[in-house]
Image (cartoon, rainbow, N blue to C red; front, side, top):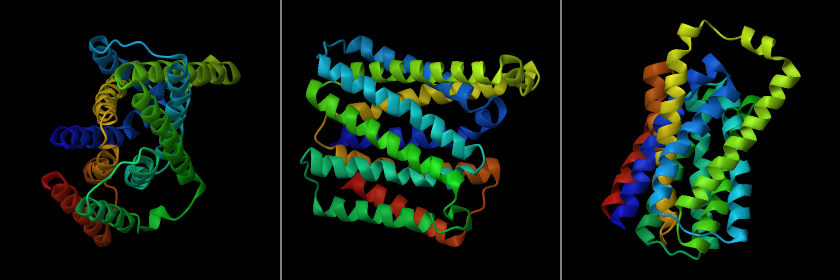
Length: 289
């Protein structure tokens, strides 16, 4: 259990950092290019792990991983569509939908059992999340609906991925196949956008080459830590503690909100800090007990 808690906590921290950073390259180089770079660079840590867990896969497992990859890539485009217009705190607090879906799938789909204490603590994590969402900028609007749909897409991805991992009893190759398919699908999408918009029109929107170095570097870094985070939670998916892991990754929006306040001056109100406090305390207690 200690390894599951540690891996889930590392994944939550990596994904929180990734989410907070994402606005910088999205604003500078656009949604599609940012997504392609992140998906490509994310292949590196996933492929490295796959080298040590080279295991055969059945046709069903290959098919499930491939379909999962489509939803994985789609989620990136949708979430970046929201973050391109909204602040990171507003966009990524909606990510609480993802761990909720994982927990429900773990309990209902995989018939996992969690202790009464951990059940209460997970409930407190989501109560804290509700408090976090009590801010003016989170009133329902079309721009935040993209983030909502992104989380539904990622929920489908992880349900398919966890199912595949449960069947094959290893996580590295399913994740690698899904990432390759996600990257290829988004690349094809971007090629279609270029053909429709015209390469010259797209390039005109770009700043000077020297101004692209940092956004590209950030996107590459995001991809690497995203791949590492998926490796961590892929390992969790091989255990019978997926629901517990889902509860722990629910703390990632805390990292986003704190960094959003520092980097982007996102406005936080008292009730949000109360929500964050509840989530942090519950997560710490869950890790200890």
